[in-house]
Structure formats: structure tokens, C-alpha cells
Image (cartoon, rainbow, N blue to C red; front, side, top):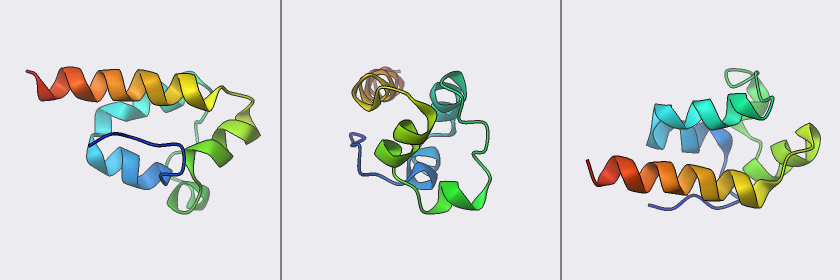
Length: 69
């Protein structure tokens, strides 16, 4: 499965907990807070001043590598 900018943070984390590293790296330190349960990656990137397209590319590359292990 590929991550898209409209996916909810919680859903991405449930796909693979290893995705947390990418969110933490851009300043999303509130992964367990209520916002993570309803906020999309795009919304969170706007709030944190991050490039959603780069984040999605990084996460999808990671997920692809994990699938090929």
C-alpha cells in the first residue's frame, strides 16, 4: 500500500510503526495526541512547515524497502 497526503497520521503509523521516524524527523512529536487520530499528513505538514510531497516519497520508499525484505 502507498501512502498519500490525505491519509490520517494514525493510519500511516498502523501500516508500519517504522514510519514514525519520518514524522518525528520533521517535528511531529505529538504522534500519540488526539490530532494524530484525525489529522491528515497534508494538514500536519502545513502546521509543521514541512514538504508533504517529500514526506510521502520518503515514507513510500521506506515501505517499499520493508516489503522487499
